Length: 365
Length: 231
Image 1 (cartoon, one colour):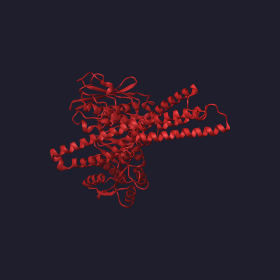
Image 2 (cartoon, helix red, strand yellow):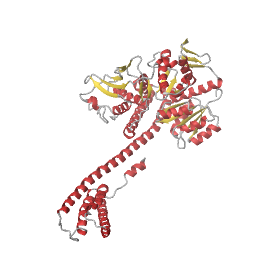
Image 3 (tube, chains in turn orange, green):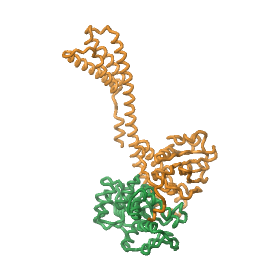
């Protein structure tokens, strides 16, 4: 990992020195073309050779930038005027065509070098992004192994009779456990965010009971739910959904995490699942601060933090953005609503109900 | 393993992980062997008498799945795989190669021990051809094809019973969707995957106190199902 950072920091020569070198190269190209044309003219009669000088201009503009390109353009008009068009060996302008050529060449040099700059920047950006993603990926992995030792060791301590008997010690053990869990879910967020931005997400769709998704999420969050009254309001006989169950569970965990974070400790949270004609709606309803006007879209943006909380409650601003990306990959939608500040927030997932394959009677056949 | 101390073989390249695993297993009166590499782990598994193997999925010299496959070629010793960020496909693949269960790092020792004990019990049951599986409120009498919840016999359809039976044979450990579909219907297929979910729902109505928050027949999303004691 560190070698890759070092590679990135590899020192580059000064800019002007590079320009000078590239300008010399582009003049060399012009000279080369001139030489070739000179030879060709011995064998064939060619009337208009200026157009050939666009080659060095384009090469210089695409690879080396504006200065070498403009120099190549001027040289590319001057060289044929001097060597090939009568009066030969005379640089003075005798023909208005040459002025037009010069203007045209310079335009080509400027425009092409701009395109070249854009292309180079895109390439650099892509490299930087790849590097960043690789870094995040390996950092997350490197962080997880020591975290596993911490969580594992603490779980053994928690079982020890000496610690169980001591209220203070067991509360310390619990703090360690909870904070390690928090750290773990932040690492997971980094991994998920990297996965979403670098690889794109490839859902593995399968039939799954929406109740299993909700229960899976509750099991994952059980450490944080001990002091929360959670009400589950799940409609009977919900149809199965065809989604990536791990992704959807992660997304729902994010919504739940959000509700836990932005509502008062011990305030109740409702999880409901119901069916309308062609969608299944899973809602997480909290009794927190609610959303400010216009925030219901913004909270799903990457790195968005609500100004009313940004100082008081820590967070990366990735959670809901991750949730949205994962839900969309499963063919669903997610939205937030609130009756206004002080009236809580409802986060809602809409999943399409796809045609269910055949009916239940076949199960026992 | 009943009259002697059970021996667990840990194959993990991370020293700190091995340290806490050793402490955790020692406290539970296991004898612990440690190996750092897949090669050495395989050698130990062959040469020593081992009751349980805990293997890391990402070893420097060998894929954990490869180790599972190679051990399974000649032994039915219980194997539990440890992994960091394994995808669902990875988990399913490991289980299909013959691993008894997996835990994802970071995990608590309680969780690992529960999986380990479940795998050891299954091994012992097979060896002694025991036919009753007790799991908290649920008990399954495999010889008489009878299922009880709190001593009340539960009437089940043939497919429902087959589902309980396969899960009970692996009680406490996860069983993949594919394996269940194959055992119940004999063929794989998307329709059967759908039926399995419906069948599970029907079974839960019969054996769970609250079928919407199952405690006995729990789902491992993307992987399979597990029968637990309901704690």
